[in-house]
Length: 69
View 1 (tube, one colour):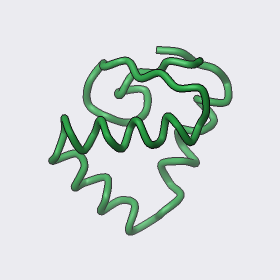
View 2 (tube, one colour):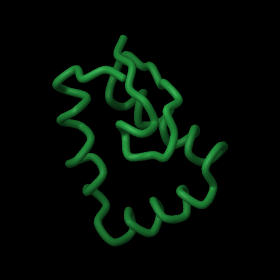
View 3 (cartoon, rainbow, N blue to C red):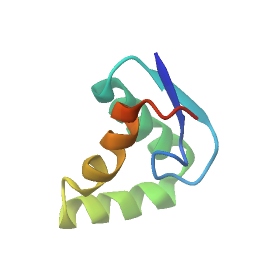
View 4 (cartoon, one colour):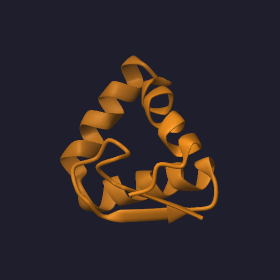
């Protein structure tokens, strides 16, 4: 189980998020952002539409390196 904060994953807050896999943390982050940061969610959606792999390219190496919250 790895834990990273919303902020470490590109979000605005220090809420810790824990998951066993990259796919699980992605789903958890999407849900957290949608429920807690709707304006950020809109910005992330816009960024995703411009470059669908940008967030993963930036965040997955942090996850893989095991950098915790």
